[in-house]
Image (cartoon, rainbow, N blue to C red):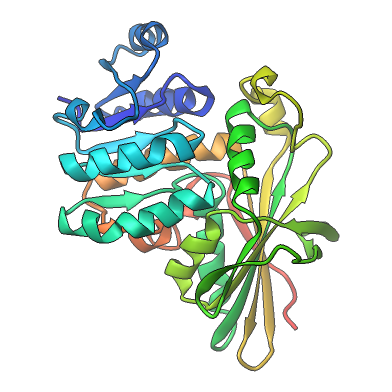
Amino acid sequence: MSPLLIYGATGYTGRMAAERAKAQGLVFEIAGRNRQRLEALSAQLQVPYRVFDADANAAASLSGISVLLNFAGPFAHTAEPLMRACIHAGVDYLDITAEINVYRLAERLGAEAFAQGVMLLPGVGWDVVPTDALALHVARRVDQPRSLRIALQVPGSMSRGSAKSVSEIIGAGVLARVAGELVATPDAPPRQFDFGQGPMLCVPLSFGDLVTAWHATAIPDIRMYVHLSGEAFPEGDLSLLHDGPDAAARDAHRARAAVEITGADGSIARSVIETVNGYTYTPLAAVEAARRVLGGERRRGFTAPSQVFGGGFALSIAGTVITDLSAR
């Protein structure tokens, strides 16, 4: 039996992750819902495959597995049945989602997972891995951090899967963490952030970082923003989109996130993290996370990436750089 199962392996990002896992020499299997596609990828990679739906019966398909790495989005449809299956089967759960409601779900299931000795670790890709690391880094630059602002720069075109997930994020409404609690902030105004190339207008949007950053830093007030490029957020029939940008397009667009933290004395520190394109970063980080979990780096219950692997995990992915901007 293989200790790692990559679910959604025939999708755009899942396939890159499976190819990365093979190149890294990991012992793993692939899984998903489409037998024909799984057979083809299984033959290409010379790994076993399993066919099953992300539903109430999924636990029966996890025999012999230690870690499930889920790439099948939108995660609003797959995360809950697969998390519950993992809890039932004693399997650690990882995924790459940015959908905030999946993190809220993982929080709610955290106590049950803890009792069963299972880890729930959503967000082992871009953007949570870099923002987790950056928030911890900037928090050390101020005295008694009180408020955290996270902004994402989304460059280039979006994959079909990401576009569907963004629809789930938008549907969750605009939220912020105020005095430690998530509250609706529908009238939150846009504001500018500097990603290292001058101020850019960013709009509020609720990604999973509103949950992970709270667990990683305990900063009570957190807000999230995103800079929208002209082609980043598509409209219309999302099913007609291409799988995702090709290697040349990914190489042309590096990804950045900015963090601004205000201390109790009013001082402000700002830093930027720059990585390879998010679609390139995610399979690298996700497979490395799975490798580390298989090696024993794990915590029971719901957790954030930096709580398991430390703040340096993001920087272990080649091409990742943190730059400190002027404080004030």
